[in-house]
Image (cartoon, rainbow, N blue to C red; front, side, top):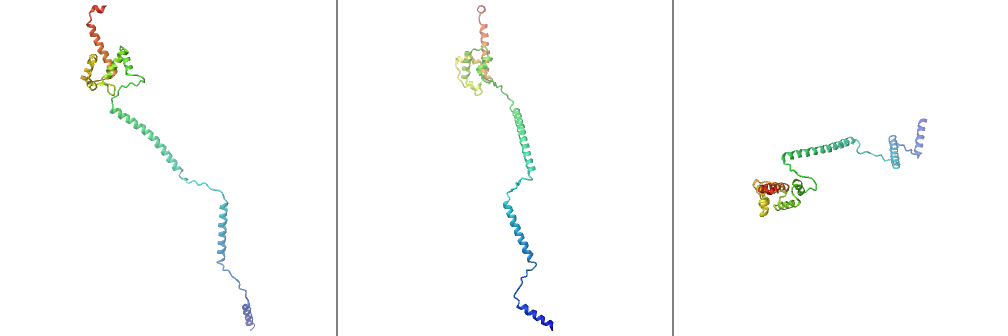
Length: 212
């Protein structure tokens, strides 16, 4: 009886009470705390990065240094091999050229030496006026680009009688034998011809004239 009365009184008091407590579930509370902590931590890191002035230098070619060194060594090797190969090719080209073209002209390379000067040394008996006269005859015979008179150049010319008397024998032999003469060779041939003429004329002189 007494117990029933107490229960009725408690129910009446509970109905008259206006306070309603707010109870947060256990599983929601830690999640809110964790998200707030993460947000604050991210914000702090962002602030630290804005203040920091350190900028690390990143080597983009890291790990390729060995490869680059090998490439440089290879380029140097190829350059040296190319220089050696060039010398070998030049040597081989010269060897082949000498095997094909066996003719070696006797070219005088002394500076300041003219054909007239050569003739003075080789034909010492000739005077300066004589050399000038022979050169005039030689140039009249129309030497080719090599500085030689040949069968073709001489046969095309109409040679005056006085000139033919002087060097006709030489020109006839040149045409007959199909030879060529340089100015030096022409001077030597004229020397031989004049010596023969001199010896021939000397034989026809009376002995008493020679004794005088």
